[in-house]
Length: 91
Length: 144
Image (tube, rainbow over all chains, first blue to last red):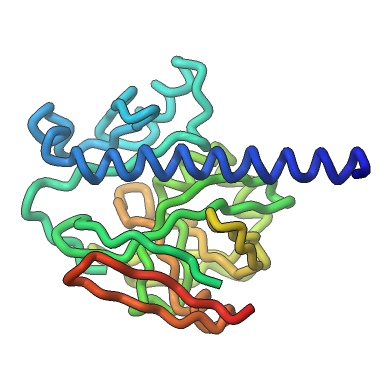
């Protein structure tokens, strides 16, 4: 196998690994939304990494600044808004 | 080819959700995204929170997107969007395609609009959408 092909495969692996972790944190968020509400995250954006909230704020820019302080790349971190219980979003 | 989808409660309702990586060379973007599969949306839209995660300046992003800002009505108001042509979208099973994606550029600051995978994706990939709400099962079937 050529070196370029090996590099390309590694990149694909890394992309999919990153997506997998992101999906896991997304799944954790969904399963634990009530817990997050009880912990006063309602109405806030919350950043999840390795199935734990690591930053939160009333707007996403606050969360991103907090992540940068933690030396995290916000592009790779799952961030979602915690809607109040019973809130219905019609798209 | 089958793309498995999630069926989750989100913002007051059962939704079909998916995850993909959005990539572009110019502007340079690489971003995992969670989106609602929305057959009521004609377009694929990246939500303001996901755009903020990209950390691309508004000015830079605006200059790389095509067209004039077009008004789009979303839940809770109206935003204006511009289009990123031929963005690459890749799913966890390795399926990748190119798609025009809308980015909010105006009046989006206070919006909590989630990202949407819209009808343009379903039509361009000739996807069949299967949804079994009772059993929380959904997937896309795409002809190879």
